[in-house]
Length: 113
Image (cartoon, rainbow, N blue to C red):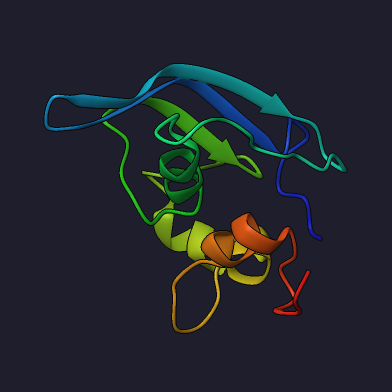
């Protein structure tokens, strides 16, 4: 994978997102170094899918900032969509993201677990 930044692969600072009166993300902070495998675990409604959708430019945050490979997911959404992280790792044809498929089976290759 081509690195565009010397900083962390993913940097999230004070990320917030609400849906009406429901606060899905309440100022999360996260720094993921290059070469790290990250698992996102938590109970239903914890904001896991919301965070992944923001990181893959499928959803805009209400506040805070998120950088993937040094690119701001709001200001540089077009560049993000063309990046190896978004285009090859998490986004796929038909469903927009592979996250729902891998959240049930733990795999992203389509094979049964």
